[in-house]
Length: 221
Image (cartoon, rainbow, N blue to C red):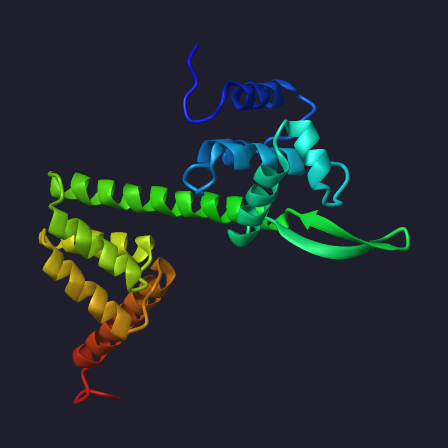
């Protein structure tokens, strides 16, 4: 088997880590490390740090355990620090001040990445809803309009409600939906509950007006 970019030893080290069930390797990190701008060697160092029982920063030990040279480890750790995946802080341990590696920032990055992926998934579902209702694929311009609505602060829920309103009225174009969203924004409607509240108020007002019109004021006892 041929390995490219990273050497055979590095690949074997990754395989060893993955096979060792005693090591904790977050699935999200393995699946998204490239999207998070982490190279293979930095990934190995991160996995190593995630599973280190001792938080004290010891470059020599990292070198020995991972078969890397000192300069390589120093560069990787510094890069991870600059990208805010880890932080180095001095802590008092057994009366001595030791430089320690903290990895909470890595978990934060993974969490934000997961939330970002979930958000994209919701957005993709919104595109699918529009294409289903329109009975065709959306044009690049329509995709851009949808994205701009989201960037302007309209939730996927309120955009879908505006789409439903347009479909109910038999109108299938983005300009009409844009007008609906604009009117709702003026009325501070940003959810189904808010829309229902306004609709119920309008309905009650109409019923009151009808009662006043139907009342026979001349024959009042």
